[in-house]
Length: 153
Image (tube, rainbow, N blue to C red):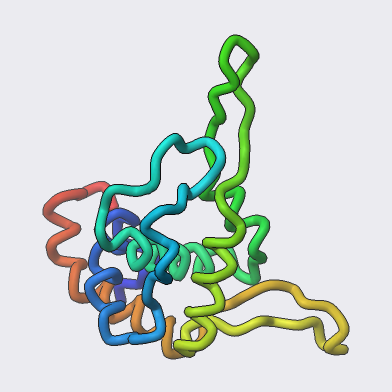
């Protein structure tokens, strides 16, 4: 059976983005049109639906790397900051955007915070069975088209 690990990530994120419309809680806040996604960016995103695309991408990353925290996800969405004549440095993406999207995914029932067995320490977020079935369902739908576009997968 095809799972979300077997299909190309860019195609999977685009297909999940279309499925995310059924979750009304994953919506961009008012300030999202004016905000940069990190200090390494010069301008805000130009796509209208960048928030939902980022949420779909984060859902995939939580599924693959989970349990994972906000800081580690922000590092994944970071980049290289241009510091003029000084050498470039790696910087993290916006932790606020990462945190807000994870909170929306929690409210939608797609992710949940995992704690250690004693319940004293938070280990990070993991996907729920609902999100796992969503990812697998989307991967099965697109498996035939991905075999044509990327036969090495």
